[in-house]
Length: 110
Image 1 (cartoon, helix red, strand yellow):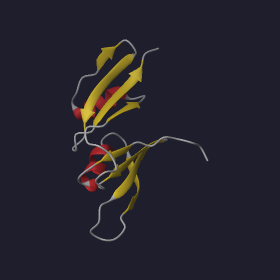
Image 2 (cartoon, one colour):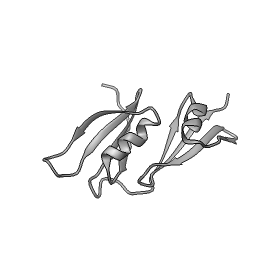
Image 3 (cartoon, one colour):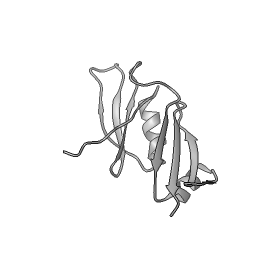
Image 4 (cartoon, rainbow, N blue to C red):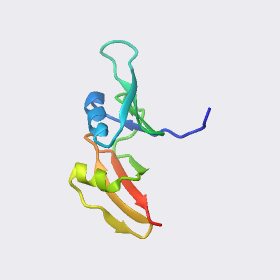
């Protein structure tokens, strides 16, 4: 087993969040709910990068910031209609998902 960290993001509507994250290249891996009608806990992945999305109150705070390094920043920027900005450490964009969670997405320089 490889050790890893998987951020948990609070979402109100897991299905809508999964669709939004699909625009970033994430694919839903699984979904769990304790019984019908209860909140969803799901995983999305983009290659080896994973996020847990939770409808459970208390699992995570709104307005969380996650940094994601990608090889294809221009594709991400084009998909969301934003322009990358130059920083001393690389190029990046910042997006907000439908629940207000912030994703800073970048490609390091050099």
